[in-house]
Length: 110
Image (cartoon, rainbow, N blue to C red):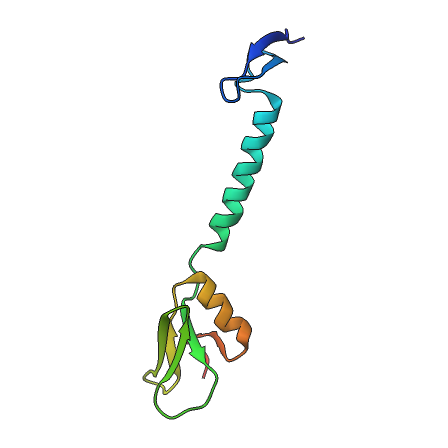
């Protein structure tokens, strides 16, 4: 059985009953846990896409320009004539794919 003793939390300076292995009070432990989960969610939203190359599905002659938040993406025809562009910003990438006019480019497709 663990021995509880009165301790002072070094983070928030509150007095609590805790065992020797608890470095901070239960309130601060919960706060640290929630902050870790929040940071992980934010990090996962800002990861670069697996396939940053997008294909424009709108049939046009020459180049297609998509401007999002001050960034311009120029979709130029590649060797097979498919208009493609590299979009590394994860939020711009998601926005363009959701619009329905762009999709991730797969080299193996005709």
